[in-house]
Length: 99
Image (cartoon, rainbow, N blue to C red):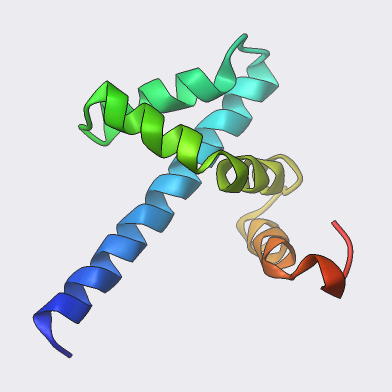
């Protein structure tokens, strides 16, 4: 595997991890009744990913749908296995079934 392919995989893995972390923060904020949970999630991304606030907010807002879907999976799961099952449900196309 070439260096650029490995870099691309690492970047995609980092991106997915950032999405999951942000979704977890969103789910926690929503559960706590925070007034603007998406904004707080953006602040958390900036703080914990050592990212400029503007870049973090662009990341959060441009991925809002995915983050909300993952937050739904967190809120409706009681274990890591159930979370993984919910994520697989999300990956199914709308024609394939329910959610």
